[in-house]
Image (cartoon, rainbow, N blue to C red):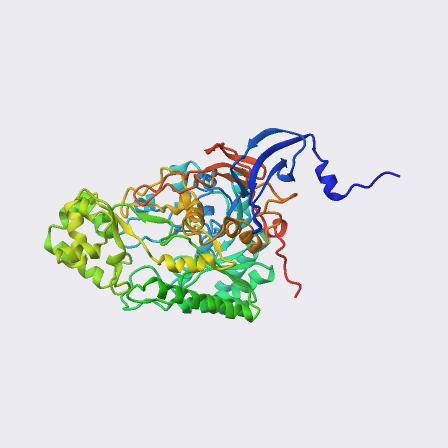
Length: 609
């Protein structure tokens, strides 16, 4: 009688004598939280076939002696899907070890499209040319105008319309990372309401939005996101969000939210910002009423303390915020969160200090022209009055009285000012903070400065060390040349290129807040589990071969606020679905990434109710 092979033995026998890749003698951190162990990994096609002592040969053998072998990093809150169709090799992602992104966050997704295109901010390097503006750009333009501009600038035809069309378009193009898609509420609202969005949706409009969400979920979306500080979604009431989230819930999906915490980022004459904790409570209430899993995006403390608190007080406010979430969990609600591990975030950072005064730099045409104009008392007074009225979001003393403490000089021809805040310079000079800002630009048009420390590190540490928190970038994927040469002179935020190496360097190697295995779990298996991904985020037999191999001693981010566009050190090899996308620290050009779909690549399923 023939001997029956066990499934595991059968799996090993598929290609024992010839694998595609063998990773030899590495220190394996498998993503589960277990202690690192030494071993080898055999890969065939897109799967891990064997872990341990490997018998047989391979087309490619990687000697990982002394290196960490871990699951590829999963960025649970990314905006890379908005630029992935322009940068399909995703260089800023794979070179820092990212193999999977969750896109469509903060309410923005590249689809569905009808008649309109919604500004998603990556377009700012040319948006002012097609729609000139002083303070704030027109955010919704006819789709045909956008298509023509993309054709002219990038040679790309935007042919997709439905959410499913976009996923198929991206698959045909080929991408270097795996993409977990969410559908964006802002995008959907823009398609239905067009430029007339500063109001409550009508019944027919809400119905149309629900149909677009339904189409996206059927096409494979894992859920829906909102960006409730951004237009047009900021004008949606809780009833609108609940009704749309119910559609997501019907398919077992996830509701990811950039919760209300700043209000619309435009002219804000009121004295006080909204209470942040109310935004978190609203997110919880949406989860409760829609019976949907809630992912709180890039969380921060729900409590504003002024003046900025000492570390101990910031930690207490953070723990109280976490307590609010824990109380919701006790009700049986599915509430989790991700956190940016740096004290500043966002997709961009200011390069030149003159960018802070972007409306007037645009008006005068250049940094140099603005510097000359600032010698005119009437111009200075006009700018100062507009700022003090709350007309310009980026400097609003009514909304943020401590703006000058966070606005820091990062480079200047006068060495005295480097590394110092506008507030400290103003104090030394005996001047008003706005006059100090004006004088610095007037004296040195090329002086560089940006905002830092949106949150304290004490606050970030509390969220990072929480048992099931996850780490995110909140950035696009871009190349190493992108810059906005016109006001506001943005550069990509350093997190774009190195947030995951930074996370490991800072919280494992320097602060020792986490063990290596704990840190790896927060950027691999935990986000995979949260998104219900099948066989990803873990190094185990039969799992997909998404793997990063790095030198822990060498691992570090190299970009900074002066020049963020540098690749990190220490990332040696990255595999996506068993194919090398990074080899010896360099891009290979391969595009083995997959567009993952809820119904095929996860265990998220429609409810039976």
